[in-house]
Length: 580
Image (cartoon, rainbow, N blue to C red; front, side, top):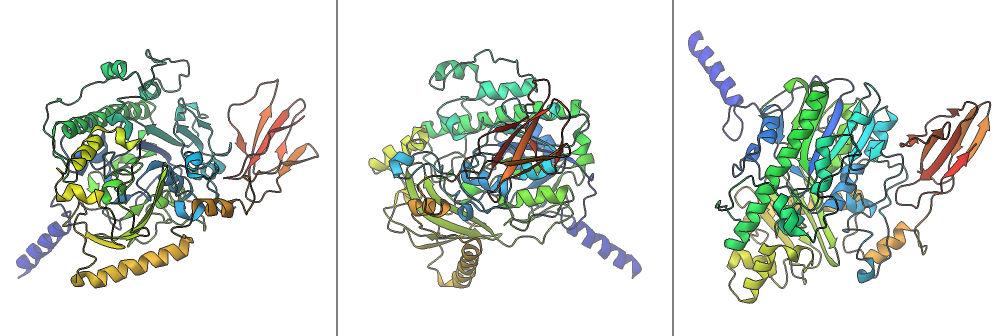
């Protein structure tokens, strides 16, 4: 009898160790990660990235560096952006706030303003909100960003030690803990019609910290596609046959775009490998938590800008020091608003009360999410109003402009050959039912999709009585979320700006800092509530590159000067003043 009991225990153990995909990799669940107390944190952020890589089941193109990272780390298949486009999503990442709660939901707040009749403005979060990088700087971290910002507001000078094409952890003080962001643009939508327009900047990553390096084709414009094309490495044969999603037309034009997509991914993987080698060469790999993720879903038509999973879902890999939980999968739902609180939690700091996300790692790890939320509003000069909520299987979408069609004639997107092909065949009446859905003249007020059985979200279940309970559940959750974050869908953008500016005609400006020097110490304050104060100490006429974050009175020596600037997010910064 004891023999059979032992067999049963072994059987239960083996079944429990199987992942949902049938592999023997144990799914990371409630286990506690024993991490360094002040780990370095490296973010490798690519653009317009769906689950097109081998660690997430797509073996079309080899990505040896990302595959190795996944083998040594944990994969997260259920990460979702808050929008299907970069700027609102990056606002969420930077602040831990939903874009539609801080005026960051329109893409972009400072462009196409003449066309839409709205002045240029910036998102204005509550006064206690700070960029996550500033919060880490206050805790002694060196914070660098290479090089993209796009937060829907100008970053205060206190946000980064360095934010430039040359920004790198190698510029920090000896043994200083760091938070470094490396942005890769190779996979951007523009790579489908302007191949490798950003290679000059990214090639510098191979020469980390060397601001004197010049790319041999420096000065090449995006318009000079022929020269850039000749520089483009080929990672995959151009005659490869690709699987085309059903909402696109499977012909030579789309196949060519798919080649560009996968080839761009392979080039990005090569750049990721170069950065990881720098980390390893510096002896920092085993004291660094490495994140890889995209800023939203894929670049193709009916992916980017939409809030189907193809526009929101992006793969994430996290490698922990000493390969903790290597080769495992974590299936929990994660939103971009969770990144900021998670970073604080990883360094032992409690997430800020204003943050609308929750930590999924670290000392302050929260209960797992039941839902993620997303929104779509203006893109360039075209506006729609859509909100979405998703659980592990179902997606509920509420259309606030049902009289308006899905498709928005966005000029930038119409430069993609596959998009041009869709429009051509639409006009010729040659699209099938799946391809025509996007071009309907109007849309239902509510949509419900089973994302497990219908991953392309083509079969609306909202009118099916069998799913009434699920529809009501997700609709109720959406109402709760909208109320909690104070999102008013369909609010006119001009009215939004009036609200952000408190009814005034121009963007608010941060008051000048107030300086008080007593007993050899300089105290600084600012009457603008929520302003960050940055300062530089100048000695022998040498001006530091980085601004320090003011926290306590500054002790000054004879002959030193101080430059000071105050800046509240979304306001105009104060002028820089100098104290001698």
